[in-house]
Length: 367
Image (tube, rainbow, N blue to C red; front, top):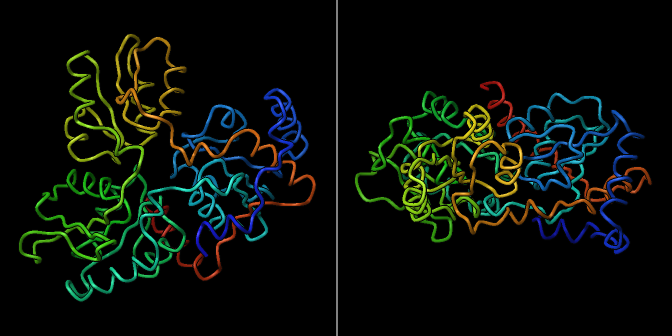
């Protein structure tokens, strides 16, 4: 069942929630949180809107929220303020008695949608014909449960932007080559940082079903899936040139989902958590241009009024799918729990969950 079929089977926000004021919704959300107490857990990703993140019990990047979900044995209801693949991960890692709810089923991930299980199985068959049993698959956590399951079944693991270098290093102790799904930029930047030259990296195009590489195939060490983050790919070398010209003393820090040339020309690159920590540790008066999602950049700006902080791309907009989760949808999800009529429950099929959990556990055991 694809995401669109899932959406069809789940109800959309009732009109009554669109007529409430922000103050009314905030009051009702807070009251429900107090009534449900420890039975309710709300994890919130860093890219969420402020109107939602204010009610999160924990905030973090994908790795942190995966770990916290795995450790949470008390909450009966986990209302995940993030996107679909994150809620799937929470369902996989938590107990069967716990219900994971995504406030809006339209909150997907364009990157995750760039690798479906049919494309991946077809690619794997072709690559096995070319390279034999020399490849270990890794998948970024920004992928569907089906892709995580595929990887887990074949000895691989998930990775995050926080631990990608560690997991790629581990993967090379297992096999001669790796297939990195679904973000080519994170895979390329990670492998390059570990000493793999660009000329030893190939790209698999799932649309044309072809391996893009010029040279001797025996030299290939990394096969990158041709996918990307729609937000981070919009940061360009022209954005960097503009900052270098207008404010040459400003440090540029970007997420490794950005293109290789953008990462190479930046001062620093790292995960969401790394970016937050670098800004927090910097002295008052320091100047930063940040290349990541705008909700987070705006929150960092608010949290550090003593520093000069801008978005690397002044025309960047927030992640549109993350923004599907808003205060009306959060309130609806919580009131549905109290009314005993759960909507948008995320439930991964048992067989898929089994091997997806294996891929996630291999990562968590290494972290």
